[in-house]
Image 1 (cartoon, rainbow, N blue to C red):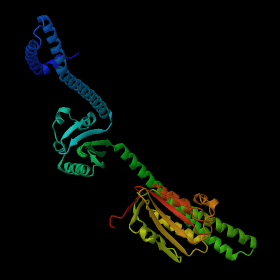
Image 2 (cartoon, rainbow, N blue to C red; image 1 turned 180 degrees about the vertical axis):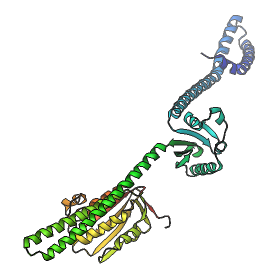
Image 3 (tube, rainbow, N blue to C red; image 1 turned 45 degrees about the horizontal axis):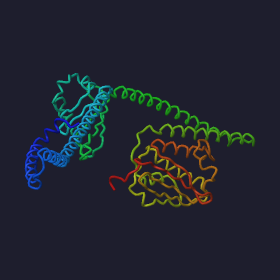
Image 4 (cartoon, helix red, strand yellow; image 1 turned 30 degrees about the horizontal axis):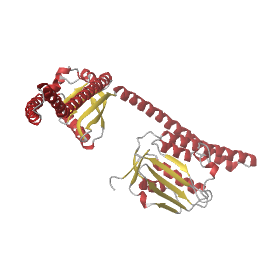
Length: 426
């Protein structure tokens, strides 16, 4: 059914068509009378009406059809717009519900630090009403120092188009703040910054209590170890004196056994000391080549080769990384027998960085390649490779043995993405 709006848009056209139809009817009547003057008036009118009706239908069909299609397209576009607006409204309601139900402070500022949106949690934390924030700027509620820090973070978010995180203290409480970019999907530009601020005061208090407790336990352990090691030194001295004076062969055998047990106890205490220090200090970026050279200083073997490809490479690991390298070299020197050469080389991809440690010793039997990392497995205490794996695991680094038996040991230290980089000074 053609609507009134459709007819209103066709009024000018219909007027022209009506005028033209009158002209055509007049011309048709004249031509018809000239061509056939014997037609009756009734016959003449019937022929004229049929002719003009067919002609009118032909003339009006295309404008009417075009106008109808345009109106239908307009209706469809209006319907789609209404649906899009409804979806946007629903999405905004869901977003607002999420923002308001969050336990964190959430607010959005534009590139000039003007507030665009603030949730109730943030208003409550600041002790202000929504009206007091309306049309306000970040600088209206913060000190000059706070403004400088916040503006610097916002500039960094805009420049990098990535999130920035920091911690700050306010009125005796600690907060973790994360600034996230709001990116326009059309031009891929940052149009605003959303800030999520979490109160981490309780977490900080718990962490401090844990640090204090850990420090006290470490102090107690150090004192205990020191005293036990002193007593072991006395015991070893007494055993040595007893061995010198003992005449009986069985007595000497028992004294030697006591000495072995004392050495084992000493090794276990040293292991406990080393294991306790894993993860105590924060991981840090460490230069591979420099750490290898540092680990090698107290060891003596014929040759150490470091691949030039490792130059400038850094890995993010526990500060005990130097002990990892030291133990690998010491194991090669101690168990390698004929080992005369140790080589460190590197392989880097987008996803991983692999550091290879190879020697020319007898290698590891295939059935022992995983067992050697088990605590207590080995010729002596069996703690070296166990410690190595534990130290590396603190930062997600793996280690495995892939050498061919009889051709030397080959350890692969596998660093995941994000755990390696070229030194900034390179």
